[in-house]
Image (cartoon, rainbow, N blue to C red):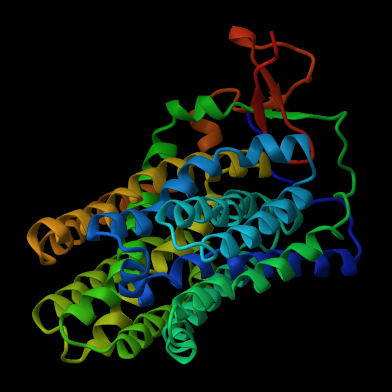
Length: 435
């Protein structure tokens, strides 16, 4: 039997405001480094002297990093306060944003991208559990707040990158990508002031066996859904502007339209979680998102320079699936620990799946010289999104699918194969003792 999540012990209003502010500022920075690349992808190709295939790798790198680095979230948060983990992650992100534009080398650019994605990856997996822990009765509101901030950051990055690059002139794309370091640095500061959660201690541990989620059909289905929606989003963010430019649109106009797509997501991210927490609305919302994706992609395929604003707006509406899955993470686990574990596993494997999309688009574009492969990929993805989404909208809990997923544990008690299950006030971790 699993225990239901209970409200956190009383916390001062000032403390909750500080936590909420830190969460929202972190959300703002989760996509700025990603969305700023697409509008100047052609300039990056010229500036670094790279092929279309390597450009595809650049657009896929964030997803690969989200997948690999995200799994480090629970171990780090179990060893250290999660506020300090996120502060450090955002500081590393700041350095990465500066590094990747400092030297005209593709390998330095990729190394900087890895560092840049540390903040996004750890923020992705830790924020849902933090919302569940600090605001258990206002999950929809707080998820809506930080996902809206995420959309705002992504929209501002998409809209402003090309104009900034044009205003600077030669190598302006470097300034357009590097300026986001200032915002990452600002977001790191409030996490250093967040207090320890009242009532939390390292003496009272709750273990969550992350590997055990491999036996959960719900966890795998949520990972597939998350990956498929992320694939759609990152193909849109990474390649739509370049696709429109190849059809004859100016860089400024293409960047603006991708920014318009991101602007549509802002109010959507504020509203969708409030609806997604209502069981009876989940499947109708899913059907609406899928219809928007199909209409948007079809419009770009048959009439890319006619009513383009409508097609990108429809794609923006389809991207409401992101806010929906964030809300569902909080609904498919009974405790903050199981929610954090589900978020980590689903996002980790989901981003690994999603990373295939932008990379394939770049490779196929290099081989064929066109975008037929991109449209085949996104249409297939929309179909699978409907199938997996329909399944995760059925009310159930990951705790119920895996016996003993959550339970008390001691950091000194060895588990099977010499592993030690550890968690405390923070999300869980499985550690292997040194020989």
